[in-house]
Image 1 (tube, helix red, strand yellow):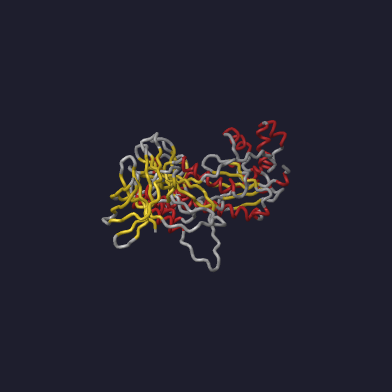
Image 2 (cartoon, rainbow, N blue to C red; image 1 turned 90 degrees about the vertical axis):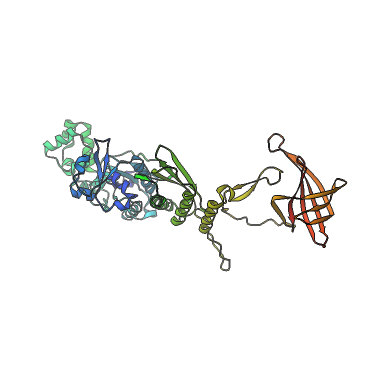
Length: 504
């Protein structure tokens, strides 16, 4: 790549373990918080927020030392939550450029984005960096950003930014001047190198850049040359982009076991908000949401809800989760919550000026959820015919709204309506010459005026659901002149007559 055409933006999120835990716990953001890592009793502080640092808490303190500071909230480090938050930030950075490299180290998240050629899409680098930080802030993470035409310069400048939300853009050719005041601590120095530079009186990158290259290489080898190039903003880099998959997931490990549904929904509400922000950034909606609850004893409880149409309405999705978990509560206290979502295309319908207003899909989804909670999931949905000629051969499948309507509906001739009786009603039949002559239906006697049939069918001789039936279409007349058109069925195996349907 032509060096003049290179342009990189480095996103830095300091104290990432602490920010990861606090993004889904807004109630703890106003107090001093520390994150402990390790097994008891050797736990140490690995990350903390500003309020904890203001109290005097430092990295490496033990649990006993932290307990001496009143009002400090202590959390255990969760690698699963950090992985979910990291994936969300990489996904956010990918919205600005598909070329993203992860340079994270320790408790800092560092993402370098190749933004060369994005000026016509996102404007000048200052605008792009501002939009990037705003997107990251919407995910609950506070970061800073530096932009430079040199990869290592962008990383070093991002590490040198002290304030959160700061942006620094360095024009091409001014990398050395921008790096000069930065301390050597931002470089990845070994203990021996740090001691050597300290003995030489080298404290900043500007002092390192001023050293003669030949003498530095003679004393430190090629490592010295590499450090000098970084300090001067001249170090080349082979960009290694990530290839992340788009996967919507949020996870939180609860501080204590939860049994109340209201407490669970409070956490799920925050997680849904993050999923919707991430999906909206890619012009998606949530087609389904799956909640996986980790329970005491090692078991898991998984439920999935699907709105009638893909939606970004948080209250709707939360209500569907509420109704589903209320109907299928977890059998044990909850230790962790994970939400995964399936992205779907947003549904926008352009109505005509005089078109009637359609019912809201959100209300349809909630109504279906309430019906399923009352009658059971297997009894609510839409019928789907089975590949069989047996009477009543259908199943109930979940109701979904089709994504598109056919442009033309096929025309069909007018036919009489058939109302099925479920279950079929038993009738008494009088036969003449093996044909129905009279029947008694609902305590009323009818005489057969016309009879069509019989149509006989049987099937599934290979299974226990063997069936065989004889069907007649009859026109009946009662003694008072009332006419009844019906479908009469005879079970050939049990020799039982039943009224299956009525014609209107």
